[in-house]
Image (cartoon, rainbow, N blue to C red; front, top):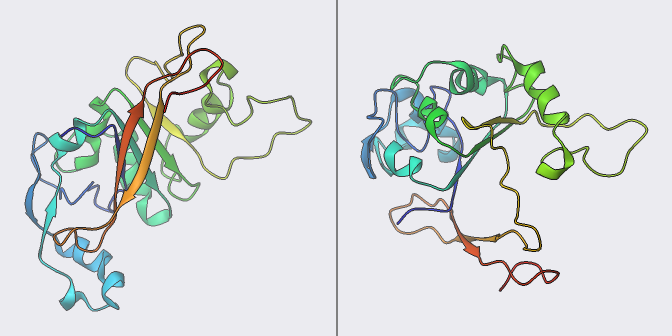
Length: 211
């Protein structure tokens, strides 16, 4: 089943899900062997004991992830800066699995300034985001004019090959709503919660999204 919304993090080596460097860009959900770097990065979830970190996991494949309607990736901290640089500005390569997201038509990446520190075009990305027209509904400064708009705490980077950063609702028709809820972790999910989302049809004009 294809997801409406896929929420991702990114590893220091550029993995998404647990698709380690060298993973097939067309891979599907499968059992994957973790690298020692990934095991070390996740030891904090096992009281710092790397020997307690599993060697294998169940992960969605890159092909599975790419089938989602919208992908949201969040990264924070200087340790993720190299991976974010490759994700946004690098060449698409199995050595940096997250770079496959450059070929997805609707990806939103939210990062803090530390994670953005290796971006060569970081200042440009910030300025283009701040200057977006209000009708796109993306700019944090699209509301009433302010004497001095606050500096955003996150540096958003949005990749969209067609430059269609937002899909405008039809006149007189509300935009579809997305409902998301946390799902309890299953026995094979490693104690992690997942998110499930669905679209709600738009209601009549003036009434907002339908229920």
